[in-house]
Structure formats: C-alpha cells, structure tokens
Image (cartoon, rainbow, N blue to C red):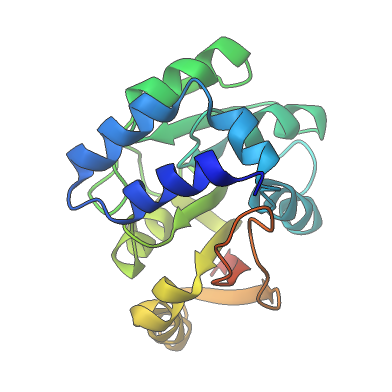
Length: 210
C-alpha cells in the first residue's frame, strides 16, 4: 500500500517504551514525515483545523500546537486566521523541520504528560493531533492542557480508540462532573490513515474550558 513506509515507522513509535525512544524515532523520521503521511492519507490535521475554526474565533491568540511534529497544522493555522501559534513537541528533529516553515512564534521541546512550562490560562486554544494514541500519551496529559488553557478557550484533540477505551473516556466524564470542562463536540469514530492497514478508529473531541 501507499502507506507502507509510514506503517513501519508508526509500528515502531506505537511500540516505544520511553519518551527518549519516541523522540529518537521521530528524530529519524522527521525528514520524510510530511511526504509519507500525505501518502497515508493522514486526516487528523484537517479535521482538527475544521473543528478549531468552528469553536475558536478567528484571531484568537496565542494558540498551542501540542505535539506539533513537523508543523502540518501550523502551516494551515496561519492561513486560516490564527496569527500567533506556538509549537510543542518531544522531538528536536521534528521541531527543526517545523521551524524551517516559519509559521510558529516559539518552539518548545517538552513531553506531554509531564508538567509544562506555561502559566495557568496562558493559551486561548490548544490543538493536539495524533498525540493521544498508542505508545504516546493518555489521559494523564489532560490536566496540564486544561490548566494552561484559559477559561472559555477550546482544546481540540484526537484520541485513538486504544487510548479512549484505556481510561481517557472515563477521565473526561470525571472532568465534566467536576465542571472543569464541557464537551462542545465529538466526532463519530473515523480511520485516521486510510492509506495504511491501521483500521483502529480515532475521534476528534472539542473541550471547552469552564
């Protein structure tokens, strides 16, 4: 299939056992990532962008692209009217590619799931595509993203079913019960890379910060 190269690399990152291993694998992949994900028919960025535009006003700033990778979403955010976007990613190699695109105001190398170096309520919105997935991060990363997003702001993220059914959905219910968030929108499950053999569905969720 067209996504053969990406399938091999995805299998490796899904099976990674540490943040350091994930970062090294993405460092090695950075140079060919955009082309290979395009061949795989990667849908997450366009779906996230559509939902962000629906739930966060044009011109809202600053935004955080959490798990920015090579900057696939960052390129489109600037075009669609979000003038100040910052990138966060675990991989220095991916961030180097993103930096060359010139679409981010700042780049931050940090892992999701740990404490993040931003003040409470710093960002007007956060987008995170393809990060809450096998071998990456799960519900443990939610609280920090909520903390750094301002009240009334929106977090748009994709969640693979392996993570959704592994505690993520339950954590959302808890956060809703605590009145920390409201669930503004949730897509039906969809296959994120139809050009590969990975048929485990994902969904995109929009969280409004209460």
